[in-house]
Length: 263
Image 1: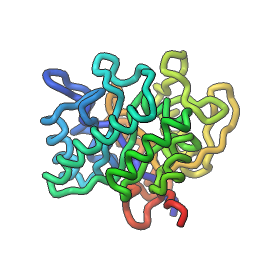
Image 2: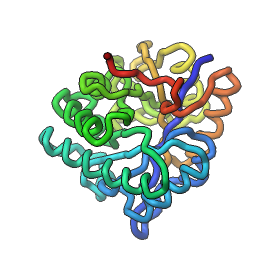
Image 3: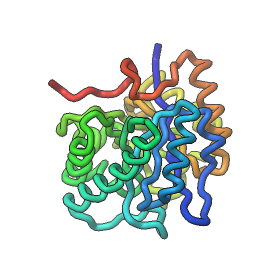
Image 4: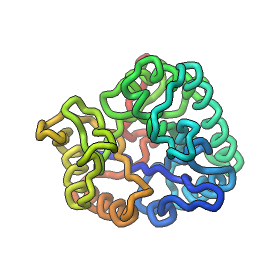
């Protein structure tokens, strides 16, 4: 039986600002990527989001980003590999504390926004992120864009990796995500997004923005929790996958899909 994890970026509210529909999305996903205070989130939000994920049986992961609340972590910054290492260790460590306080373990780490995209293309940054994950807890799973430098870096560092795909984002013919600044970068039709996700899982392919057919292996599919209809999309996507005979399960399950490091 084919199997896939559904993950969602969560806990991105902070202070008086409310972002995302976390409570409505949680019943339909299997892994939560919880913001750690740099691009979104704050201590109280982190604690409450961990607790909410545990109530729904959803695996908990850290979602470290660039220190850019104003830009929501989606603006590229010039950082060194050493800085990337430090900011990932700092943020994962913070969420690790909240998970431990709740009696839970972290399953994974997924970089956010610009940090994710930068590490997907830059081997030195990717190696720094992977080293940070390994040094905090070698048992953590590193989520990265399928076919990217980030996944390769995780394998080099000896940590488990999960190749990630996006049902609601457009792809280039080389497997990269189309920049959000360009027209057509977001797939806004939920029917189209569901069809794309099913094809990713069942056929291992995605249609690029220029019409090319691109091979794609996915262990986990991301749902953006700040989308206008995130909860409805999550519900429809999970139902469609299960109707197609796909088991939806967190990658941290002992028999769930994730690439183990080479011996």
